[in-house]
Image (cartoon, rainbow over all chains, first blue to last red; front, side, top):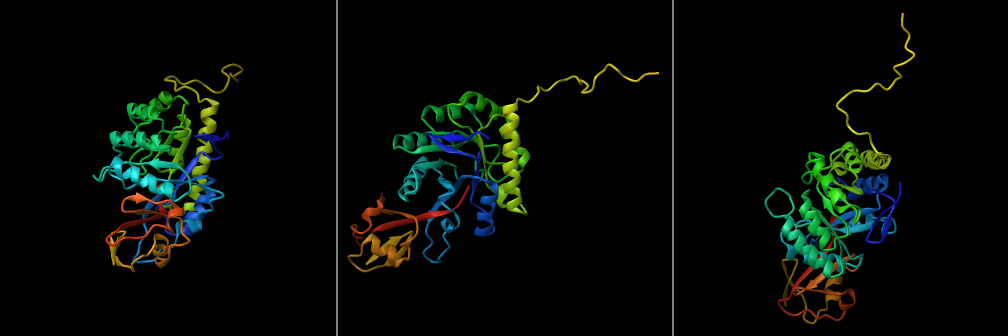
Length: 258
Length: 66
């Protein structure tokens, strides 16, 4: 596969993988390895002072993976900007996966606050990868403020419902038109979803729950990686149009008749 | 003196620096970020910033997330 470039940085894999919800850090480490991913997302949280917790980073080889901190859990633009600044202060990079999600249980992004936070963060020199809805006007606004990718959801986070509205994602992909990568983030359930996203022309996908909560996360990580590859190759190869009328695959002449 | 670290009231000695506090909390080796009274500190500031009575400190780390 040809490499993926985001904000001037090149990656061989088009699969981004989240580090949440694994049963153990060992499972996570092995799944990341099997997925072939180079970009892994992490969250930013208070250190627990009551109980020593093992460090996630002991299981992530920073020479191999590029760490992408998110602002998950932030309900307002202000909180997201604060979290992004903290993540940057930890000294890994100035990249942030921006999420602004109201506290209403839907896990659906607040597009207005996301654009607001993105604008501020871009101004402060961040490379901003915003999680957003599948609304093309919101995507356009995020593009206008200088985001490094557009990351529309397939469906709501953790639902595994795949891509119920592929035509909306396609509209975003067409609108963005290669200016920045489009990454389908959230709602992925199976490699077929990942493949569909790539067939539509997405540049990459981000998967977390579907790998972490599979019965065998390592094998599922491999399957997702193959799904990305299959979908990307199919997109580049150009699929046939859908036809109303059937057409035979075998010649109509030279048939054996009585 | 009392300070608040990650929402928790802690009794620490006067004149303690941020670096010293992190050492006390056994966070010396981890990749963390520190906010002192709402201001995010650069790593090189840790040894020089003295913690004042009633200060609010936030210490964050990276955890699993999507």
